[in-house]
Every structure is written in structure tokens, then in C-alpha cells.
Image (tube, rainbow, N blue to C red; front, side, top):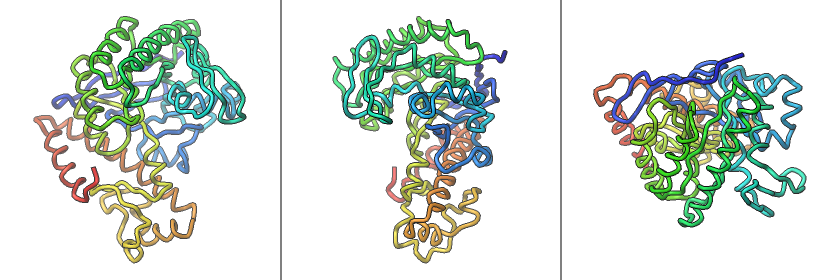
Amino acid sequence: MSSPPTFRVTAADGAARAGVLMTPHGEVLTPAFMPVGTKATVKSVDPQELRGLGADIVLGNSYHLHFRPGAELIAELGGLHRFMAWDGPILTDSGGFQVFSLEGFRKVDDGGVEFQSHVDGGRRKLTPERAIEIQATLGSDIAMAFDHVIPGGADEATARDALDRTLQWLARCKQRHEQLQTSEQTLWPIIQGGTLPALRTESLDRIMELGPWTGIAIGGLSVGEPKDKMYQTIDVLEARLPPTLPRYLMGVGFPADLVAAVERGIDLFDCVAPTRGGRNGSAFTPEGTLNIRNAAYRTDDGALDPSCDCETCTTYSRGYLRHLFVAGELLGLRLLSLHNVRYLIRLAAERRAAIQRGGDAFATWAEDWRRRYQHTGVA
């Protein structure tokens, strides 16, 4: 039987940390970006390419995999790692965000959430226990607790209600996880509380009372709140988060946010932004985000990002990439997705290297990075 994940900080510069997360399927060097493979695939990028891009860990979503093709079928076919041909670490989200973002029928109570399936329109119910059972069946390395997600602008009463329910559900998630005796899989709790400092710190304190834990996540950010509120919320938590646990900021993946969050002591991130943006013609570059559909790139024979070592940037011109998008060719979507994933993984490696240098090197690196990145007016 494999051991659950362990984590150690190897260097620090201010609040920024570099570390190593050890899992049953290998190590993750932090800070790390986790490409999102919601339905057991990172859109348009295969597992060998992900390894080549430098990915250590990917994220899957138990809600989507539960409905299609089904966790039990995946287990029959060898578990999620074998099913998607990815032999590295996998973190699975519980489905809380997906359930609460569904349109149409949805009823929340202390028992769980009743909702309308996006697959067949039927009414279903997801409970904390069922969310844990699904993730145990999938066989991920890290399972996330089922939480009550609310919009970024929610009022205090709504945030309080969701916080209390999330903590009640966490206790049930922990109990079911322990009953299943999945010693090779670990469970991570999620801090909620909107953008209200008192609720966030209360959430953290109450979570720690239910421990011990091998990691901890901050949820309910990047869901519509102003950027400064997101940063302030992380600031409030940073000084109180246990230094020995890896810290996962859920659903955040734009470059400027990643840099700001690492400054505030965050270790892990995930987001669909690199592949979703890639499919829509948006590319991350050191100077900011560009839209490859722009007519200015029609005759541009330069690389998408001359500093990048990915297949897209070392092989194709901006003019060719623009042609692919204008012509509606699928290759364009794949090539920009490849680059965007590689950009965020390279960005993580640069941050890690700066932290390891010490002596305020990370602060200097971050200042220089922002000066260049915002040159085009893109934050």
C-alpha cells in the first residue's frame, strides 16, 4: 500500500515558498500549476505532451467523470491513472463548483445538493459521502472535500450559511474517507467564507480542529470578486496557514494572479484558462496576452513567444498560427493550448528558481516580471 502525500518546504523568500510534494505517483515541485483534465483529458493535449511540457500533476473532476463514463467503469478499466494514461499524480475536485454553477433546478440543504444533470436532464443528488466515494473509486492521489461554493459578491449571511455547511460537510467527508480506508489517497479540506476576513479565519481555525491534514485549499475565489479582494483574502490567511502544509488556491490560473499568489505563500494552482484561451486564440507571452486572430500578425514570421521552448514557438510563425485560426483549423487550437500550458509551467519554474536564490531575489524577479508583462497594458 502506498503512503499518502507528504510535503516539505525547501526554500523561502519572504512569504514565497519552494517545496516538494511527494505523492504515491511521484513528486511535484512547487510552486506548481496543475493542468485541468476535467473529463480525464487536458483538452487537445495528450499525456506524453503534458510530460514534455513539464507537468508534474493534473486535475480531474469527479462530477463530470461520475456522469460520463462513470467512476465504476473507470475503476473496471484500471482506475483513473490507467484510464487516461497518466502515471503521475492526480488531484480530483469534488464537484462542488460544478454543481453550484449549474443553471436550472438546484436545491441545497444540509444533506447535500439536488440538481439537474447536464447530461440527461434527470434529477440527481450529491452528498458529501457520495463525493468521497466517487473520488475513492477513481483512485486519485488527492481528493477534495465537498464544499458549498457561493458567488464572489455574496453577502455576510450567505457566506456564513455556506461556511457552516461546508464545515459540516467536511466532517462527514472525513468520516467517510476514513471508513473507506483509502490509505493511498489523502483528503484535503477547503477554506470558504467569501471575502470576509473574520469568516475566512474562522473557517481555517475550525478546519484545523478537525485535522490532521496533509494539505489545505482556499476555495471560493476567482468567482467574480474584485482582484484586490482576492489578494486581501489570501493575505489574511497567509500568516495563519500551517507552514508545513501545501497550500492550494483553487481555480486561479492567469499569470498575474499566479505571481501575486506565490508572493503570498501559495504552492499549487489549477485553471482551465490556458486551454480555454488557447481554443479562442489567446496566447500568454512575457509581454502580456495577445490575440493571434489580430490582423497585425497576418505577415508576422516571428515566433509566438521567442523565449519559449515549446513545439509551437520553436516550429511555427505567428502568421501561420493566425492562418490556422482564421481558416478554422483544429491544429491552431492545439498549438496555442500547448504553448499556454507550457508558459504557466515555465512561469512556475522561474518563480521556484527565484525563491531558491533567496536574498529577496523573488521580489526582484516579480517586480521585473510585472514591468515587462504590463508593458502592453495587460495585467
